[in-house]
Length: 143
Image 1 (cartoon, helix red, strand yellow):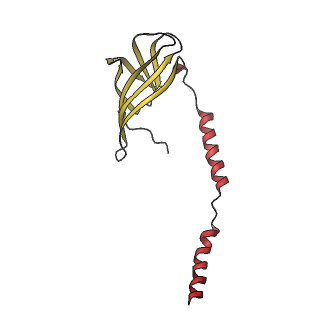
Image 2 (cartoon, one colour):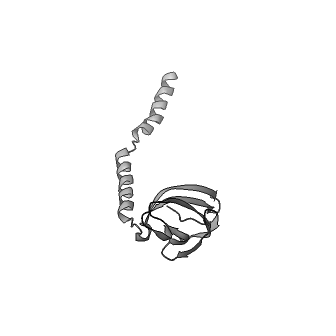
Image 3 (cartoon, one colour):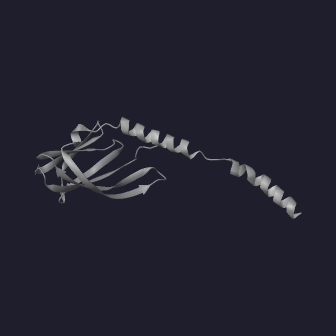
């Protein structure tokens, strides 16, 4: 009886070991997708006048209804004297407020998926500063 159980066990488990996952093919496909995304990326010429150092992100997520809200505080250094700052922002997201040093800044969202922010005063070249963007909306699905 014990021998019969072993034989049945081997017969049942044999096909499971025979199914090999082709890691190389999966890796090649992932690399192709990644390379395609890099090739299709187009840098926005309107965002080249500052050096973004880092973002501080504060999110409220509700995946059940596909909704996000939160604040993004961006720390940047001006590459030239700036009176405006442009960020990429999908038009599915709506900005309710932009703050710099606790003060409201004027802003607009255009059809080019840009957030155009008018600074309260000229930002001098080489100076580190920050501003906070408060937004909400339904993010685009990545797949």
